[in-house]
Image 1 (cartoon, rainbow, N blue to C red):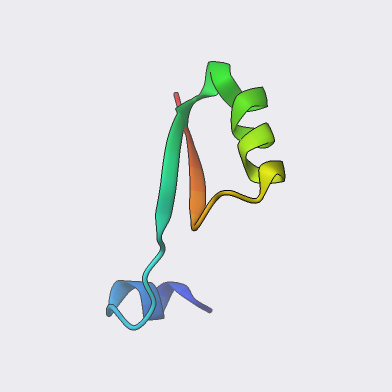
Image 2 (image 1 turned 90 degrees about the horizontal axis):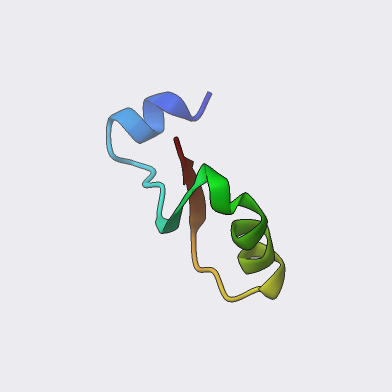
Length: 44
């Protein structure tokens, strides 16, 4: 349902930080800290 909005630019996904998958625990701690201002991405 939201994909069309993302595709046509009506909705933007804001990425706050990107973490390697090996740092998933650190990424989770970052989320729990409340300091993020967007989405976190885990990379492989």
